[in-house]
Length: 86
Length: 354
Image 1 (tube, rainbow over the protein chains, first blue to last red):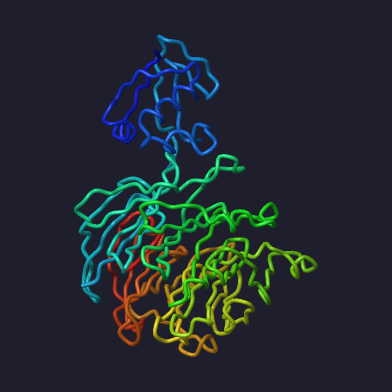
Image 2: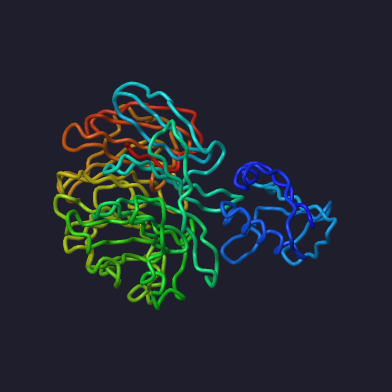
């Protein structure tokens, strides 16, 4: 199963887990699985539409990923705040 | 001792002190996150904070004790079929029933809680307003920033939105109608002013001692309503500018209100480089500048709409406001004299006496 890597505060919302194995064949499916397993994460990465929030970056291994990016069993997803803000 | 909850661009600051002397920062929370609004429900003592993270979206948190844990409130979201996700939360206001609170946000949405702020749900009647597709946002988004309850009558509420005007309910939020008569949107073409919905209210407060009276700061205009928000009269004569954002009303004197004018929409700074609060004691017939103790030389400050509050009433009423410069000023004598409560905070979004 693909592995999702999280940093605080997301890791705290995910029960203190910095790394989780989750099912799914796309980025969106894996993040939905994360929400199901750890409901406190709901609304933090994906918005009400199920879209990745504008200022959150999800990398699949070393490439930028989108919701529909395909994910394989050996892939690692990194969920990171974007380099933005002031 | 006065406690202020100061929402800033970089977190919540709790200030404590006595009027006339600098306040101390006694606590900080949500470090680094934009805190749009923070208030304490006087009925329960619970603190409620609206945080709009640039990364993780808008959330409401609550805590009963500053030393305790902040809990995230549930239900602060729009339906999945909404055109856009929830953008921002602008205000949280205790209602008249026990445990009942309102929260206003963008895009022009009203949330209600019936358990003291732990869980929230959208007011469906307002969400489903038939004219919603025609609504336009102001520069800060389509923000519902003002929620004026009616003391002792939970059925009557007035809302204000930038830029969708005033909305009134007399059945506890089951139905809503406009209350915009005589508002004058000079930023619209003349032929479009009569029936436009694009009415950019900046702030609105009810006078609790005479609930049918409301005061309004408009995007170019200061108004009063004496018929519960049905119609409005201009009370801007005597002010250096009719543009501004924050407003405070004396809860015990329906003739007393305070505004902080800015130059204009194209120059949102204090006029003439002087920081002055303007006070009316006759419901807007005349205004008096109150600047004793405030910066009067080369002071070009911006005070945002939620960054001004009152505490108590009458001649000893406390008044506190913060600027985007990070300064917080206060008065313990209803504006006759002022002192600097804090400096060098992050840009101040909101100030509320706890």
